[in-house]
Image 1 (tube, rainbow, N blue to C red):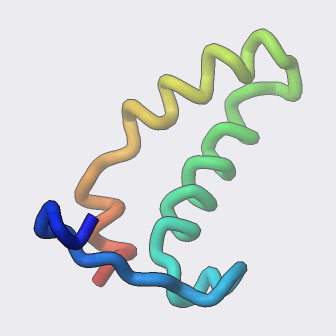
Image 2 (tube, rainbow, N blue to C red):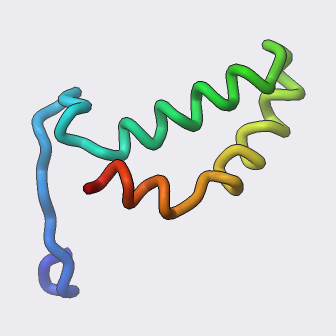
Length: 64
């Protein structure tokens, strides 16, 4: 990764306060749970829609 010009940062395992992606996934999970009505077929349809609607701006917000 570093040879390709990317920086690799390792976070402590399961430390969500340092790993901003956990906030993003948490937001996605809350939305999905509220809209899937605990039906597996509806869950399969809801997850891609949820991820598509999640704004990149939201991810940058959690990053900062």
